[in-house]
Amino acid sequence: MASYNTIENISGDGLRGLSDYCKFEYNLVKNFYVANANHDDIFQSWSGGVNGIPVGADTVTGIEIRGNTFISHTDANQPLVSQPQAIGCFDGTFKDWIIENNLIITEHWHGISLYGAINCKIVNNILAENSLNLDASMVPWIKITAHKNGTLSTGNIIRNNFCSSMTNDANIGTVDHNVISKNYTAYFVNYSGNDFHLKVGSALINAGSNVATPIIDLEQNSRLAPYDIGCYEFGAVSTDIQEISRPNTIHVFPNPVTEFSRVEIFSNLEEVIDVEVIDVIGKTIISRNEKLIQGVNSFNLDNSTLKPGMYFIKITGAQSKAMTRFVKN
Image (cartoon, rainbow, N blue to C red):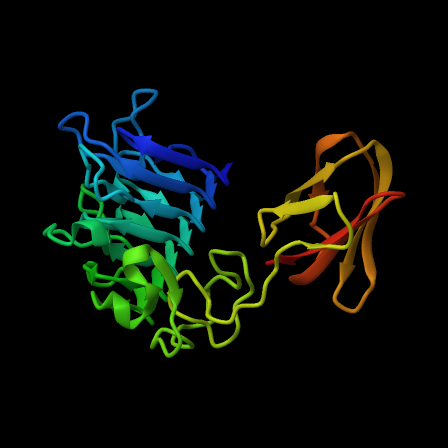
């Protein structure tokens, strides 16, 4: 897992996902520089290339790319500006991927490109041209096409996205509730300032589908049905930490959780705390104790007994009291 990182001032690829079931969540990757003739990718993946397997002759399974902000460059005066491909995956097969709630700002065709995709989801992303380089001839697209060996892409979902262009093969799966436009100022708060929250009256509000799409947005706020198109939900309900008293803070990630999640707590002192997971009607589902040290503490939480829904995790100690909410899919 690569989560909550800032990667900037880059020559080459920003992130690579070459193993199965990797997660890339809530990262900021920005400011690419030209160093050689090789193309740069903000995120790149390919199959094979190891153990005698040719590149493009294997499968990369279960990659999740969620809640990231990818920006080619943020300074109009930056020298040696590169025009990186965003999510460029050309040597599949890519199977069971989830690409959701990402903000992608670049000046290249390959906004999200999967060559050889099976049962992948591309949902609730925003792809836009970088306002610092509108003279560029390329605009970022969403594209699913056949594997380079000719094998067709099938069973995919492309839904609730905003992009400047879309170019897919026929019969790749389901493509619906997407908006294709370059009129950014009509939809977003401040295009030139890279603020892609939805403006009041935006036609993207309530225009999305609630089916097979994320229940939270890029800021991990709960979406309100009917869902909006793009990575930000207008009027979303905050799921941020609700601290009862300082100095303690508590984080749960990923959120929504799967069978297991990671809980991180910062404490100013050593003590034993009670940890409770409580459902929305106030019933305690999980109860355990943890010993805190001064500083950052973390432990795994087994969520396998939880049914899908919203829960609260509460910590209580002599000096530590905090609570936050999370969602089990």
